[in-house]
Length: 348
Image 1 (spheres, one colour):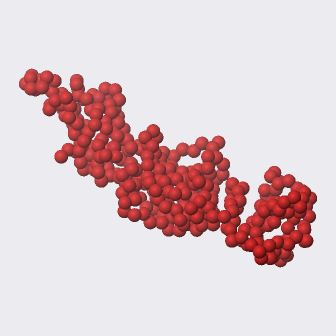
Image 2 (tube, one colour; image 1 turned 60 degrees about the vertical axis):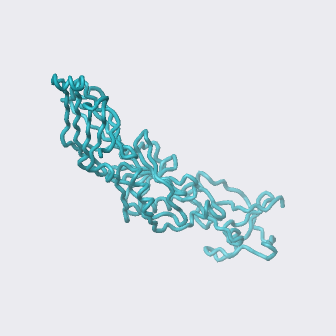
Image 3 (cartoon, one colour; image 1 turned 90 degrees about the vertical axis):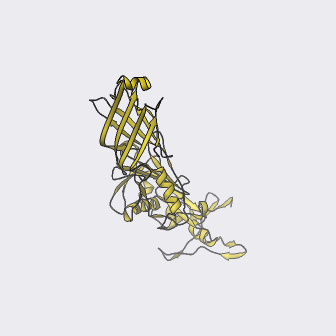
Protein backbone atom coordinates (compact mmCIF):
# COMPACT_ATOMS: atom_id res chain seq x y z
CA UNK A 1 0.00 0.00 0.00
CA UNK A 2 1.24 3.50 -0.85
CA UNK A 3 -0.18 5.06 2.32
CA UNK A 4 -2.82 4.87 4.98
CA UNK A 5 -4.98 7.98 4.67
CA UNK A 6 -6.63 9.05 7.89
CA UNK A 7 -9.69 10.27 6.07
CA UNK A 8 -12.95 9.03 4.63
CA UNK A 9 -14.50 9.11 1.20
CA UNK A 10 -17.61 11.05 2.10
CA UNK A 11 -18.84 13.28 4.88
CA UNK A 12 -21.40 10.60 5.64
CA UNK A 13 -18.60 8.12 6.41
CA UNK A 14 -16.82 10.69 8.53
CA UNK A 15 -19.68 11.70 10.77
CA UNK A 16 -22.48 9.25 10.20
CA UNK A 17 -24.67 11.81 8.41
CA UNK A 18 -26.31 11.60 5.01
CA UNK A 19 -24.62 12.79 1.88
CA UNK A 20 -27.56 12.32 -0.48
CA UNK A 21 -28.50 15.97 -0.85
CA UNK A 22 -24.89 17.00 -1.19
CA UNK A 23 -23.88 14.28 -3.63
CA UNK A 24 -25.60 15.52 -6.75
CA UNK A 25 -23.23 18.40 -7.43
CA UNK A 26 -20.24 17.85 -5.16
CA UNK A 27 -19.47 14.13 -4.83
CA UNK A 28 -17.79 11.98 -7.47
CA UNK A 29 -18.60 8.28 -7.65
CA UNK A 30 -15.61 5.91 -7.48
CA UNK A 31 -14.96 2.16 -7.30
CA UNK A 32 -13.29 1.08 -4.06
CA UNK A 33 -12.89 -2.10 -1.99
CA UNK A 34 -13.73 -2.99 1.59
CA UNK A 35 -10.45 -4.40 2.91
CA UNK A 36 -11.03 -7.02 5.64
CA UNK A 37 -7.35 -8.03 5.87
CA UNK A 38 -5.98 -4.85 7.46
CA UNK A 39 -5.35 -4.73 11.21
CA UNK A 40 -4.35 -1.74 13.35
CA UNK A 41 -2.32 -0.89 16.41
CA UNK A 42 -2.61 2.42 18.28
CA UNK A 43 0.18 3.19 20.73
CA UNK A 44 1.19 -0.48 20.77
CA UNK A 45 -2.31 -1.81 21.39
CA UNK A 46 -4.54 -3.62 18.91
CA UNK A 47 -7.45 -1.59 17.60
CA UNK A 48 -10.19 -2.14 15.08
CA UNK A 49 -12.96 0.16 13.91
CA UNK A 50 -16.12 -0.20 16.00
CA UNK A 51 -19.57 -1.29 14.91
CA UNK A 52 -21.62 1.22 12.94
CA UNK A 53 -24.72 1.87 15.11
CA UNK A 54 -26.84 2.51 12.03
CA UNK A 55 -26.07 -0.83 10.35
CA UNK A 56 -24.91 -3.00 13.30
CA UNK A 57 -21.93 -3.97 11.15
CA UNK A 58 -18.24 -3.43 11.83
CA UNK A 59 -16.72 -0.45 10.06
CA UNK A 60 -14.18 -1.73 7.54
CA UNK A 61 -11.28 0.21 5.98
CA UNK A 62 -11.57 0.99 2.27
CA UNK A 63 -8.77 0.55 -0.23
CA UNK A 64 -8.75 2.90 -3.21
CA UNK A 65 -5.90 3.32 -5.68
CA UNK A 66 -3.33 1.95 -3.24
CA UNK A 67 -4.40 4.08 -0.26
CA UNK A 68 -6.45 2.96 2.72
CA UNK A 69 -9.25 5.10 4.08
CA UNK A 70 -10.37 4.74 7.69
CA UNK A 71 -13.61 6.09 9.24
CA UNK A 72 -12.42 9.36 10.70
CA UNK A 73 -14.70 9.69 13.71
CA UNK A 74 -13.91 6.16 14.87
CA UNK A 75 -10.17 6.78 14.59
CA UNK A 76 -10.38 10.23 16.24
CA UNK A 77 -12.28 8.72 19.17
CA UNK A 78 -9.62 6.03 19.51
CA UNK A 79 -6.95 8.75 19.61
CA UNK A 80 -9.05 10.69 22.15
CA UNK A 81 -9.36 13.62 19.75
CA UNK A 82 -12.67 15.46 19.25
CA UNK A 83 -13.96 15.63 15.71
CA UNK A 84 -16.80 17.73 14.36
CA UNK A 85 -18.35 18.57 11.00
CA UNK A 86 -19.59 22.03 10.05
CA UNK A 87 -22.20 21.27 7.39
CA UNK A 88 -22.74 24.93 6.46
CA UNK A 89 -19.05 25.42 5.59
CA UNK A 90 -18.36 21.79 4.57
CA UNK A 91 -15.44 21.63 6.97
CA UNK A 92 -14.16 18.86 9.24
CA UNK A 93 -12.59 19.83 12.57
CA UNK A 94 -10.14 17.48 14.30
CA UNK A 95 -8.72 18.04 17.78
CA UNK A 96 -9.29 20.95 20.11
CA UNK A 97 -10.32 24.26 18.64
CA UNK A 98 -8.71 27.61 19.39
CA UNK A 99 -8.33 28.14 23.14
CA UNK A 100 -10.22 24.92 23.76
CA UNK A 101 -13.43 26.14 22.08
CA UNK A 102 -14.91 23.83 19.47
CA UNK A 103 -18.09 23.33 17.49
CA UNK A 104 -19.11 20.88 20.22
CA UNK A 105 -18.71 23.44 23.03
CA UNK A 106 -22.04 24.22 24.70
CA UNK A 107 -23.61 27.68 24.66
CA UNK A 108 -24.01 28.75 28.29
CA UNK A 109 -25.21 31.77 30.27
CA UNK A 110 -22.74 34.64 30.51
CA UNK A 111 -22.55 37.50 33.01
CA UNK A 112 -20.63 40.76 32.72
CA UNK A 113 -18.57 42.40 35.45
CA UNK A 114 -19.32 45.95 36.59
CA UNK A 115 -16.11 47.18 34.93
CA UNK A 116 -17.09 45.55 31.64
CA UNK A 117 -20.52 47.17 31.74
CA UNK A 118 -18.94 50.56 32.46
CA UNK A 119 -16.59 50.08 29.49
CA UNK A 120 -19.56 49.32 27.24
CA UNK A 121 -21.50 52.25 28.68
CA UNK A 122 -18.68 54.70 27.93
CA UNK A 123 -18.33 53.43 24.36
CA UNK A 124 -21.88 53.01 23.02
CA UNK A 125 -23.84 56.07 22.00
CA UNK A 126 -27.12 54.17 21.85
CA UNK A 127 -28.56 51.17 23.65
CA UNK A 128 -26.06 48.31 23.62
CA UNK A 129 -27.76 44.95 23.13
CA UNK A 130 -25.73 42.25 24.87
CA UNK A 131 -26.03 38.49 24.40
CA UNK A 132 -27.04 36.66 27.56
CA UNK A 133 -25.16 33.54 26.38
CA UNK A 134 -21.75 32.73 24.90
CA UNK A 135 -19.92 29.56 23.99
CA UNK A 136 -18.33 28.00 27.07
CA UNK A 137 -14.75 29.24 27.27
CA UNK A 138 -15.39 32.55 25.51
CA UNK A 139 -14.79 35.90 27.24
CA UNK A 140 -15.58 39.59 26.73
CA UNK A 141 -12.56 41.66 25.65
CA UNK A 142 -13.60 45.23 24.78
CA UNK A 143 -16.12 47.58 23.21
CA UNK A 144 -15.33 50.01 20.41
CA UNK A 145 -16.87 52.41 17.92
CA UNK A 146 -16.43 53.49 14.32
CA UNK A 147 -16.07 57.24 13.75
CA UNK A 148 -17.06 56.89 10.09
CA UNK A 149 -20.49 55.25 10.32
CA UNK A 150 -21.24 55.76 14.01
CA UNK A 151 -21.53 52.03 14.63
CA UNK A 152 -20.26 50.26 17.74
CA UNK A 153 -18.99 46.76 18.36
CA UNK A 154 -18.41 44.23 21.11
CA UNK A 155 -15.29 42.07 20.91
CA UNK A 156 -15.11 38.64 22.50
CA UNK A 157 -12.31 36.06 22.20
CA UNK A 158 -14.19 34.10 19.55
CA UNK A 159 -16.96 36.44 18.43
CA UNK A 160 -17.38 40.02 17.19
CA UNK A 161 -20.79 41.71 17.41
CA UNK A 162 -21.35 44.88 15.39
CA UNK A 163 -24.29 47.20 16.03
CA UNK A 164 -25.49 50.14 13.94
CA UNK A 165 -28.41 52.54 14.26
CA UNK A 166 -29.95 51.71 10.88
CA UNK A 167 -30.96 48.43 9.27
CA UNK A 168 -30.51 47.69 5.61
CA UNK A 169 -30.01 44.51 3.65
CA UNK A 170 -28.52 43.97 0.20
CA UNK A 171 -30.24 40.84 -1.18
CA UNK A 172 -27.32 39.93 -3.46
CA UNK A 173 -25.07 39.64 -0.39
CA UNK A 174 -27.31 37.09 1.34
CA UNK A 175 -26.12 33.49 1.27
CA UNK A 176 -28.80 31.84 3.43
CA UNK A 177 -32.01 32.81 5.22
CA UNK A 178 -32.50 31.39 8.72
CA UNK A 179 -34.95 31.76 11.59
CA UNK A 180 -33.60 32.18 15.12
CA UNK A 181 -35.07 30.22 18.04
CA UNK A 182 -37.22 33.21 19.03
CA UNK A 183 -38.68 33.51 15.53
CA UNK A 184 -36.54 36.42 14.30
CA UNK A 185 -35.58 36.28 10.62
CA UNK A 186 -31.81 36.39 10.18
CA UNK A 187 -29.44 36.18 7.23
CA UNK A 188 -26.08 34.54 6.71
CA UNK A 189 -24.13 36.89 4.48
CA UNK A 190 -21.46 35.99 1.96
CA UNK A 191 -18.84 37.75 4.11
CA UNK A 192 -19.50 35.26 6.94
CA UNK A 193 -21.63 37.58 9.11
CA UNK A 194 -24.98 36.66 10.62
CA UNK A 195 -27.14 39.77 10.15
CA UNK A 196 -30.49 40.52 11.79
CA UNK A 197 -32.56 43.51 12.99
CA UNK A 198 -33.08 44.25 16.68
CA UNK A 199 -35.65 47.03 16.76
CA UNK A 200 -34.13 49.87 14.72
CA UNK A 201 -30.61 48.51 15.24
CA UNK A 202 -28.78 46.27 12.80
CA UNK A 203 -26.70 43.55 14.45
CA UNK A 204 -23.99 41.45 12.82
CA UNK A 205 -22.14 38.51 14.35
CA UNK A 206 -19.01 36.78 13.11
CA UNK A 207 -16.46 34.34 14.50
CA UNK A 208 -13.28 35.81 13.05
CA UNK A 209 -11.19 32.78 14.05
CA UNK A 210 -13.85 30.37 12.67
CA UNK A 211 -13.99 28.54 16.00
CA UNK A 212 -17.79 28.82 16.28
CA UNK A 213 -20.34 27.01 14.14
CA UNK A 214 -23.35 28.64 12.55
CA UNK A 215 -25.58 26.84 15.03
CA UNK A 216 -23.68 28.26 18.00
CA UNK A 217 -23.77 31.82 16.63
CA UNK A 218 -27.50 31.56 15.95
CA UNK A 219 -28.08 30.38 19.53
CA UNK A 220 -26.05 33.30 20.88
CA UNK A 221 -28.04 35.71 18.69
CA UNK A 222 -31.33 34.34 20.01
CA UNK A 223 -30.11 34.87 23.59
CA UNK A 224 -30.34 38.62 23.03
CA UNK A 225 -34.12 38.18 23.10
CA UNK A 226 -34.27 35.61 25.91
CA UNK A 227 -32.81 37.90 28.56
CA UNK A 228 -31.79 41.20 26.98
CA UNK A 229 -29.11 43.15 28.81
CA UNK A 230 -29.02 46.80 27.86
CA UNK A 231 -26.52 49.53 28.57
CA UNK A 232 -27.48 53.14 27.85
CA UNK A 233 -24.94 55.97 27.96
CA UNK A 234 -26.86 58.98 29.21
CA UNK A 235 -25.65 59.79 32.70
CA UNK A 236 -22.63 61.93 31.82
CA UNK A 237 -24.61 64.32 29.60
CA UNK A 238 -28.18 64.39 30.90
CA UNK A 239 -29.13 67.38 33.04
CA UNK A 240 -25.82 69.22 32.55
CA UNK A 241 -24.78 72.56 31.04
CA UNK A 242 -21.85 72.88 28.63
CA UNK A 243 -20.05 76.13 27.80
CA UNK A 244 -17.88 77.43 24.94
CA UNK A 245 -15.96 80.62 25.66
CA UNK A 246 -15.24 82.75 22.61
CA UNK A 247 -12.52 85.31 21.89
CA UNK A 248 -13.47 87.51 24.87
CA UNK A 249 -15.64 87.33 27.95
CA UNK A 250 -18.66 88.63 26.07
CA UNK A 251 -18.60 85.83 23.49
CA UNK A 252 -20.17 82.80 25.16
CA UNK A 253 -22.40 79.93 24.09
CA UNK A 254 -24.08 77.42 26.39
CA UNK A 255 -25.82 74.12 25.75
CA UNK A 256 -28.18 72.65 28.29
CA UNK A 257 -28.89 68.92 27.94
CA UNK A 258 -32.31 68.56 29.53
CA UNK A 259 -32.79 64.87 28.78
CA UNK A 260 -30.85 62.16 27.00
CA UNK A 261 -31.69 58.52 26.36
CA UNK A 262 -30.75 55.81 23.90
CA UNK A 263 -32.66 57.34 21.01
CA UNK A 264 -32.92 61.11 21.49
CA UNK A 265 -31.65 64.21 23.25
CA UNK A 266 -33.58 67.26 24.46
CA UNK A 267 -31.49 70.44 24.61
CA UNK A 268 -31.47 74.25 24.68
CA UNK A 269 -28.84 76.60 23.27
CA UNK A 270 -28.11 80.25 24.11
CA UNK A 271 -25.35 82.25 22.42
CA UNK A 272 -24.24 85.85 23.10
CA UNK A 273 -21.71 87.88 21.13
CA UNK A 274 -20.79 91.52 21.79
CA UNK A 275 -19.02 93.16 18.87
CA UNK A 276 -16.33 95.48 20.22
CA UNK A 277 -16.35 94.31 23.85
CA UNK A 278 -17.45 96.95 26.41
CA UNK A 279 -17.89 99.56 23.71
CA UNK A 280 -20.05 97.20 21.73
CA UNK A 281 -22.27 96.58 24.73
CA UNK A 282 -22.60 100.33 25.37
CA UNK A 283 -23.50 100.85 21.72
CA UNK A 284 -26.02 98.03 21.79
CA UNK A 285 -23.93 95.99 19.39
CA UNK A 286 -24.89 92.71 21.01
CA UNK A 287 -26.19 89.69 19.17
CA UNK A 288 -27.97 86.77 20.80
CA UNK A 289 -29.60 83.60 19.62
CA UNK A 290 -31.53 80.82 21.31
CA UNK A 291 -32.92 77.41 20.62
CA UNK A 292 -35.55 76.46 23.15
CA UNK A 293 -36.22 72.97 24.48
CA UNK A 294 -35.91 70.79 21.39
CA UNK A 295 -35.80 67.01 21.01
CA UNK A 296 -33.92 65.41 18.14
CA UNK A 297 -32.88 61.88 17.26
CA UNK A 298 -29.39 60.57 17.93
CA UNK A 299 -27.59 58.92 15.02
CA UNK A 300 -24.53 57.00 16.07
CA UNK A 301 -22.54 59.43 18.23
CA UNK A 302 -24.23 62.52 16.76
CA UNK A 303 -27.47 64.45 16.97
CA UNK A 304 -28.44 66.64 14.02
CA UNK A 305 -30.72 69.66 14.32
CA UNK A 306 -31.99 71.64 11.34
CA UNK A 307 -34.63 74.27 10.71
CA UNK A 308 -35.45 76.38 7.67
CA UNK A 309 -36.33 79.62 9.45
CA UNK A 310 -34.26 80.77 11.19
CA UNK A 311 -31.57 78.81 9.37
CA UNK A 312 -30.10 76.59 12.07
CA UNK A 313 -28.18 73.57 10.81
CA UNK A 314 -26.11 72.03 13.59
CA UNK A 315 -24.41 68.72 14.37
CA UNK A 316 -23.81 67.79 18.02
CA UNK A 317 -21.12 65.18 18.64
CA UNK A 318 -20.98 63.58 22.09
CA UNK A 319 -17.38 62.80 22.95
CA UNK A 320 -15.96 60.06 25.15
CA UNK A 321 -14.33 62.55 27.51
CA UNK A 322 -17.70 64.12 28.36
CA UNK A 323 -17.41 67.14 26.06
CA UNK A 324 -19.63 68.17 23.13
CA UNK A 325 -18.37 69.28 19.72
CA UNK A 326 -20.76 71.48 17.73
CA UNK A 327 -20.39 72.06 14.01
CA UNK A 328 -22.41 74.62 12.06
CA UNK A 329 -23.40 73.61 8.56
CA UNK A 330 -23.74 76.95 6.82
CA UNK A 331 -25.50 80.01 8.28
CA UNK A 332 -26.51 79.70 11.91
CA UNK A 333 -29.23 82.32 11.96
CA UNK A 334 -28.14 83.52 15.40
CA UNK A 335 -27.08 86.93 14.20
CA UNK A 336 -23.95 88.65 12.96
CA UNK A 337 -20.78 87.29 14.51
CA UNK A 338 -22.46 84.60 16.61
CA UNK A 339 -20.72 81.30 16.01
CA UNK A 340 -21.78 78.08 17.70
CA UNK A 341 -19.06 75.88 16.23
CA UNK A 342 -16.51 74.70 18.75
CA UNK A 343 -15.81 72.50 21.75
CA UNK A 344 -18.16 72.76 24.73
CA UNK A 345 -16.94 71.67 28.15
CA UNK A 346 -19.05 70.95 31.23
CA UNK A 347 -19.82 74.08 33.26
CA UNK A 348 -18.67 74.05 36.85
